[in-house]
Image 1 (cartoon, helix red, strand yellow):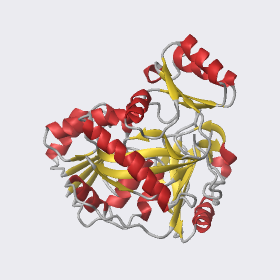
Image 2: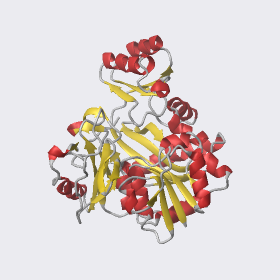
Image 3: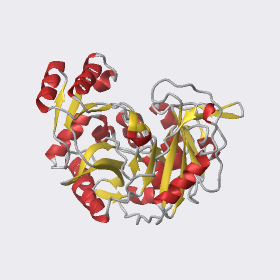
Length: 420
């Protein structure tokens, strides 16, 4: 098969690394890809949002299967375009991707289908939002309704922080149109985890759970980011928890989307929190999570091409998982998630004890340099979470801290991570 992966980040590199293991792949392409992806696939200079050029390329190169990584092209309807042209694509239509594209839609959907989640209210008016905050108090969670690259969430510890978040989103337009509508949610107490599943219509096949670390600095301090690291599986998430979440959340979601004539094909990601009443949904994504993918896919024993082919045919892929743990630590540009420099040389992180997944990298001549806030992820597998974390940090320990990078020192060192 000729396979195309659309995207340029760590998630896409991880997908491509797994696809490259398959004997079923003849040619592997990435659009646009990154410096690390170039080692495993042929990168083509087509932007993720350029559906016309991606379609032309898929036809020209006789692509048998296209996998869409990022959320923006999904919500712009790229899967619809591929389906209309009769091309196989593993990704949800824009109608199904609205589950991630609009938090208000997702909350209304969960209420309709009795999927456990936090109480909420939706606002476009500042005064009404502020009155709701005054009534409910803090802590409370303020979310931009639309896509905001994982940064449109403020967990306000005080009423003043909540009021400032409303001001930033509705008045200052920090997130532009994505924040023109906001969702204000009840603050839920508990440990968070992510559960992704391969889905096609009513068929749901869950993966192993993961836990990511959203805050920029150790001990979950600092601003929210796209994710500073992750680990899988999660020791405090039991088989019973996964069974509950699969039946009461993932399956209900897939069935509800079918009922609404929004059949889902692709990766359904549930960001969950373990409350006293059981798992509840914090958010849905409609694609592989980042950085969760980088620690989940390395544990998958199956051929990923075979899995995707089976799922698209409506057949059970019979997922098998390693008994190991996997930890991934993100190396980020100094200053991220605020302003940061690009073009800084990438340190040599090759080690027999770890693997490297590239996110924001590119080649400057024959030199690999940084090209984003989250530059790469160093991952490692071992029989325990502690050993896997030690292996990853042993590799990262070789970095000269004057090079313009930083990373958290506690990924996988504690299972208490929060990412709300």
